Image 1 (cartoon, helix red, strand yellow):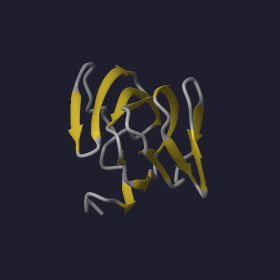
Image 2 (tube, rainbow, N blue to C red; image 1 turned 180 degrees about the vertical axis):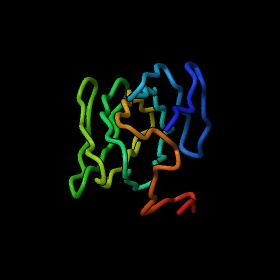
Image 3 (spheres, rainbow, N blue to C red; image 1 turned 30 degrees about the horizontal axis):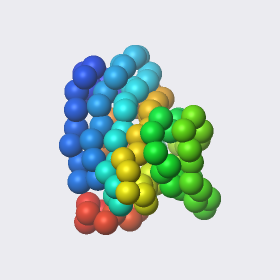
Image 4 (tube, one colour; image 1 turned 90 degrees about the vertical axis):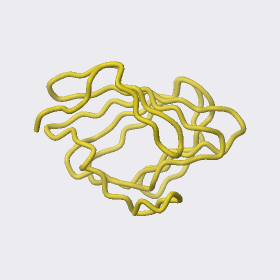
Length: 120
């Protein structure tokens, strides 16, 4: 499927913003900024895996059944079809670098399992 993102494209969400910083044939890199006390949906992807690296703050990341606080420079891999969530339980902004990899890189490849913004 064709990649729909452009470098420097920004998306606003209820939890914060994302900015596309690189696009390739089978990958997209984004800077994800999560506002204090906000969280992304508990979700999974059928066609892509992701790699997250913390560049600011101390987000709480759930992968599968494991929930853990991460710090600057720490990273986590999220395999295809694995439930995951990014939360910022602190009073400061959290940021991660997200690398999406796969043959299908599309926002429609999101299955929301839980969402505080009622997008399920």
